[in-house]
Amino acid sequence: MNTSEVAKLLGVSASTIQRWVKQLELPMERNERGHYHFNNEDIDLLRNIQTQIQNGTLLQEIAPIQEKKSRKGTVKASPETNAELERLYTIVSEIEAKVNSKADSVASYQLLQHRREIEELQGQVSGLLKQVETLESQLFELKKSALPEEPLVLNQGKNRKKKNLVSSLFGFLG
Image (cartoon, rainbow, N blue to C red; front, top):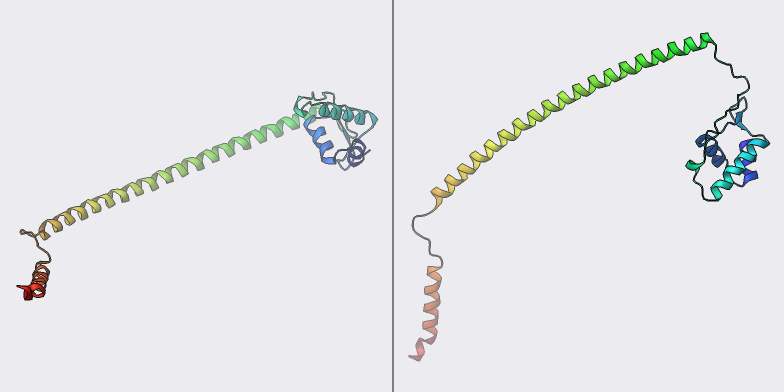
């Protein structure tokens, strides 16, 4: 049976079956196209998993099946294959080391570039602080020189006019 058929039989989705197989590392056979192929024993195993889940067991708590079925057409490793795999592992390790070295170099360069930018910004901030201090001292000098020595009295003329207006209005009484 294929994944869809098993899913329909168990009343779950095909993606649920695939998730169970992958997360529990179930030993399922695959056809030439890489699709799962389930026999009666596999279906019984999936029913057992479904029952455990329905009884409240988390998927992570279900013990994975350790024995793996051999796929049709798989080749057992020969000494030549082992040597070839070891050579490939060495090449991959060397490439990883080069990538890590390059990443370290890039990070160092970026760090130095950021440090230069920070130093430039600090120089600009220092220059701005000096300009602000200069402007503040100039403003202080301007305020100091602009203050009059005698206090200003405002509205002197208006008070006289009001007094004259009031006395003229009531002047006819006296």
